[in-house]
Length: 148
Image 1: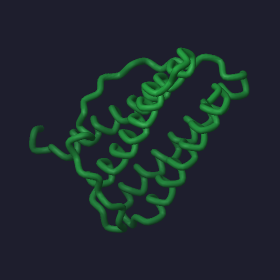
Image 2 (image 1 turned 60 degrees about the vertical axis):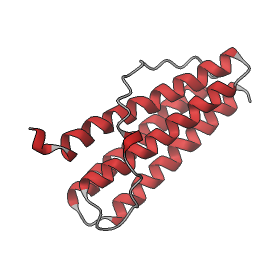
Image 3 (image 1 turned 90 degrees about the vertical axis):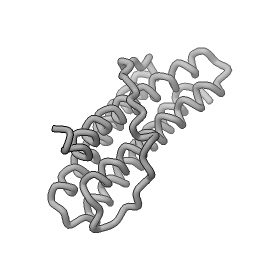
Image 4 (image 1 turned 180 degrees about the horizontal axis):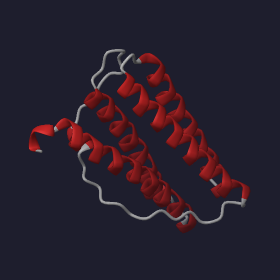
């Protein structure tokens, strides 16, 4: 798989994530949840545009800062998307989605025989890890309010 195909796949993944969050926003009646899902859908569109800019530039090198992986998502069950889901469950669901994307890119990096391809997948995994870390912070801030 060449770099352009990898970037196209990543763009498609961002579109799927956008559609998921957009659909989640449409399904909830809770204004706070709707707002979070709309924000997440917007973030996925920004990621899509970013990746498309790399595609337009012939697949120039991606670089995302490495973020701490708190591994909170790994301790949470994947909640089912429902109309009446709680705010905390909605964040947990988003967190799990980002974890899945991060793991997929890490697996692709591990399976890559080309150093260039491995680096591309590593950078995409870092991008998803950054999203996951942001959601994990939001999750701990809302799920464990008694700690305040």
